[in-house]
Structure formats: C-alpha cells, structure tokens
Image (cartoon, rainbow over all chains, first blue to last red; front, side, top):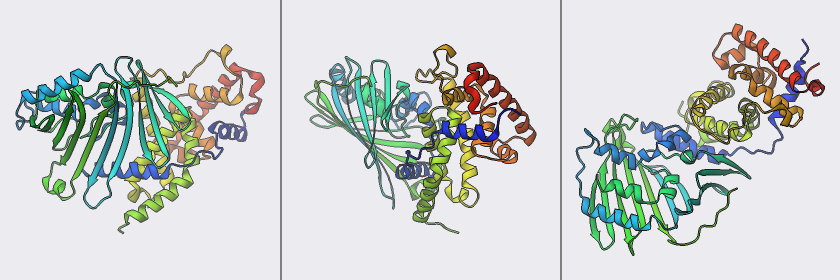
Length: 277
Length: 172
C-alpha cells in the first residue's frame, strides 16, 4: 500500500482547517433548538430550510389561498370592498422604495417569548435592497438582493444564494425575504378574495381568516387575525397574529403556540444604497 | 428520570462546546465547503437539541456523526434539483487550478462518491474502526472494506493525475 494512513490523516486534518478559530454559537443553537422543539410539540411539520422559502408564500398568504380553493375553509366570508381599498393603497406604493421593520414573536404559555427582528429597505424599480436579521446578541445576518441575485453574509464572508431560498418561514408567518422584495401587495391582494376585511376607522382595517387543514402538514388550521394601517394612501403597518389549532384540541389548547408579526413600512421614496458584495 | 430544561441546556451546551470543532472538521471534509459545513452542522445540532433527552443517554457523538452523514446526502439530493450558481464545481480545469496540496486533496475527495468520501473521512479523520464506520453509514462492514479499497485507489489515481510531483505529502 503506497498511501500512508498517518499522512492521509494529517492531510485531512490540515484540509479540515482545525485552527480553533471558529467558536460554537451555543446560544443561537439553543434558541433555534427551543423553537424547533416548540414547533414539534405543536405537531407542526416545517418545511426544510431553504427549500421552504421557495414555497414560503404558502405561509400566511398561501394558507389564505388554500382557504379559497374548492373545498377549502368554509368559514371564510369575502368582503371585497375594504380589501380592494387596501390593494389600491398597496398598488400606489409598488413603484416606490421603502424601509421595512419586522418583528416576529413566538409565544407559548409559561415560556419566554422568542423574537426575531429584521430591518431592511428595498427599491422595487432598481430591484435592490437589504434585510438584516438580528439572531443573537452581537450576531447579525444580512441578506442583499441585487437584481436577480441574492447574497447572505455569514460572519465576515458573503455567499451567493438562491433568491427564492433566502429566509424560510414557519407556518403562520410570512417569509421575510418576500415581505421585503414584494412589499405588502401580495398579502393584501389575496385578502381581496378571501378572508374578512373590515374597515374600523380612517385608514384602519382588520382582517381574519381560518386556513384549512392542508396536505402540507398543517395539523388543524390556523386562525389568523390582523390589522392594516394606511396613511396618505400608503401602507404603514401590517400586523398578523396566528394561533395554532392542533388536530387534538385538548392538546393544542393546553399549550397553544401563538405567532405574531408586526411589519412596519416607512421611508417611502428614500434612496436605497446597497452594493453587490 | 425527568431532566429540567436548565439541566438539559447546560449538558447540551457543554457537548456543543466540546464537539463543535471536531464535527465541523468532519462536515467540512464531507461537504468540501466551510460555509456549507457550518450550515449542515448547525442544522444537525438544532435537531440534536430537540432529541437531546433521548440521545444524551447514549452516544451523542455517534448520533451527531450519523446525522451529518445523512444530512450531507439529503442536502446534496436537495441541491441537485436547485439552480445554485454559488456551488463550487467538483472538477476544475487542472490547468487553471492552484497547485496547493490541500486544494488537490479537496478536489480529489469531492470526486469520490458520497459513500467513499464519508468512509475516507471517518476512517482517516475520525480514526473510526470499520465497524463504527459501517454503523455510521448504515451498511455492512464488507461494504465499508470494499468502498474503502476503491476510494483509496481512486484517490491515488486522482492525485497522481493532477501533479505527481506534489503528491509526496500523502502518497509514495
């Protein structure tokens, strides 16, 4: 045998780059683990990370769509007029740059809330923008969208990624990348056809719908409620709250998981300065 | 025995701190890319957290190793269907390739099948016995022996083909 075992072992150790510089992100892993555990307990089948985002429009918006399909949720009552007003407001902002601030919170009784914070900006005309996610103290992940390309920063390095697979989203939440690049239009357009949209005051709307039990792993159906705030014919804020309904109501009701999203749109017309990494 | 969340977290954190570097090395060799390796390892460790109470009683290292092996194959199958422009090519024109021994070895490893690469990594990087490698791969010891033999033969061919003068680091 010409290949010496010891030499190959040494070469592999050198190739593996075991220089001890990379510290284990223990806190982040525990947070992610707790979140996964909560989902698992609630009987949620989450889609696999990157691929999930390709179909992530099903989350939130997708659940809405499935409710409107034949045989879908029978609880939904269409109320197009206020919804169309929202679409109109979204249309008027679709050619304008904007800033986005998103807070996504998962709550469960007797447990500390888990929260993710995102901030970004997007110019739909130039099709460029960024989204920063705060994952843990002193750890920030940034995504950049330039034309048809997307990039993610991990540590000091940038990596080109599939634009559709940027940030996955769990059930009951909207995919963050979609919120940034598509703006409020897709969600509000879907609300024009399903769900109940009620005008509660000047520029204030509430919506509600029940997602049907889907073949995609949804255990029971999510009751989703939310609010939309419009000012100066522009969408200012969208909030969504989802409470999981499990297949066995006794189990689900004992320890319900609630997800909330607050999406603030601001800075309409402000320039977005972001460069390709 | 009921383990509290705090005790679980402490035990898990201690394991991750201790195991991170070595398993990151395994993941790097399996994927051929340090960024993908960290993603793979983190995904596996998150899954391990969920199963920690059950796994901690046994051999978490072996469990994590098997998760890495399976996760790497699943990742490859998934990405095979995607259009990924950032994917490092498995083969590069030798004329344009840098001639560092590490880079040559990395390319040679990537040219092996997943099973062969895993066997080489587990045998030579992790110093596992053929029996342990078979357990990690979920195959027989005979398969490990057979694939190990083929992998070493293929490595020799590849490294010799790239530049025989610089293969002295791992081959004679």
